Length: 463
Ligand code: ADP
Ligand code: MG
Image 1 (cartoon, protein in one colour):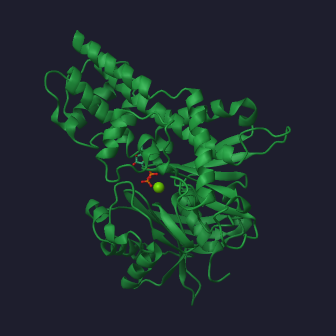
Image 2 (cartoon, rainbow, N blue to C red; image 1 turned 90 degrees about the vertical axis):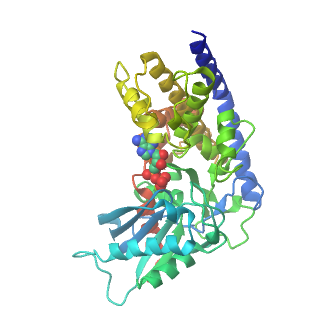
């Protein structure tokens, strides 16, 4: 029927607009490297904030003692303690707990959020078991992973620039988040010092480096997306302080805010952005990360329903609800390998209350997921290659072999297999065979939590 013809037209248009041929990805990678330069030259010089982290020494393996970490940056936050045993013994013990954040606290007041966090932390500290006690007379120390854009003012302080990923707590913007956390820790009567403030990318970089000294960058693909990497200190014109002894400085790119005329933006991205909590911001993140992929798919399906009667004469009401299609569900649809696409059918029924879907309709839905995920994965790959370009590691120099390892983490990377495989394949495609031989992506499982604890250890007041 002509109905079906119109569906196919919309699908074809989507495929064209989301196209990421290799030449376009090279433009994106180049633009990323250019923006990185600009962001390092001056504050405000680029959409990329290129935040100086004050981490100029990454873990070596020698760290020892009991340390805590707190990881806040998505719908869940985690508390963690590790017992570090030094070079030989490494992580002797590790315990963690995950707590979900009640939605009303994500848009409430700063005190309410931090009181909730401090209370959970105190409860966790109370469960310290045999062999997991701090030496008498010592204060517990914590690495705080806070994965929102922060203007870092020292290794253990920084002011919140803005919220992302659905958080919006106005009275916290411009505040020192360590100060906010410390006050809440005091309010619950806990004796603990925040020794390091990092974000998940820097934590992941630290955790990755702890196990593999060739790790030079970390990328998070989770609810949001971000990247951090190790820069030569003399290549940071905006750095006014003394050059660190190591000659290196970890930079938090905040690449989620990257945008470029080379990005393949569609009408769906534009309307998603306009209706978001942070219009005009985090454009790269909105094309790539777990918070948004499912929502982009929903918008495509809604248009197909409205303009081409994809689901019959009426538009299923549930299809109109923003963010009702979450990325894990999109992933389940995309990975459905049954011959009758049973999972797709079930999800359509469960999420949208759409029943009796034909096989060809289910196929269209899988195809939409594929287009949106492939674009996100290939753009992430271009971002990684942009970082390698900035470091001069995207080519083999005079036959010199230089290993580059990038640590990846995040729920999207971990669980959305088609996305990760596509991303990894595209990096290789962009780098070519010769460079790819010395390039490795590792999954830094839980690196950000351990990384923060490691950085608390290396910035302990008792060293
Ligand atoms: P955060 O980024 O919030 O710190 P995670 O790194 O655990 O947390 O990532 C969680 C995100 O990962 C979810 O918001 C979701 O978008 C994505 N995700 C989780 N599970 C899956 C899955 N099975 N398939 C696709 N995406 C997933
Ligand atoms: Mg995380």
